[in-house]
Amino acid sequence: MNSEKKHPLNLDWYAIITFVEKGLLVVIAFLTVYAVVVEMITVVSSRAVTLTDLLLMFIYAEVLGMVAAFYKYRKIPITVPIFIAITALCRLIILQGKGINTIDLLYESGAILLLATSALVIRWNLINLVREEKKMDE
Image (tube, rainbow, N blue to C red; front, top):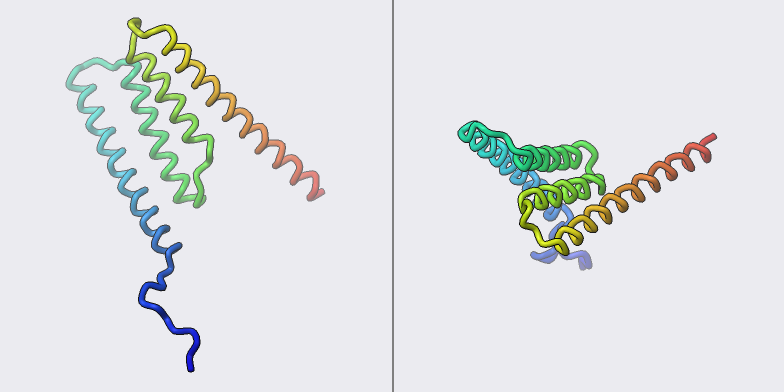
């Protein structure tokens, strides 16, 4: 008797999830490029470029960079989403303008500071980790 019978639902879930993940990243890349084109058309038609437009384009560039990094290295550096969040918060503050509530501005600025500090700590730990590996190799 064959004890290793294949069940109909015995699927390679890792392969399925990986395939779906890669498909979603392709969709994200195409939609980001579409959003860039729409934003460029909007800027050209209005004949004015604002700081919020530039920050939005920077966010799009970072998203595309994150997708490219995933396909090149098979992982996403954790600092990239942090930089995207910082840029998005800066854009939010600029969009709110002078009518922003003071406490909201403090919360958003605190969030930017917290994100920047976390990126610095992560970067510092990565640099120290590389240094320790080099010392061990010598």
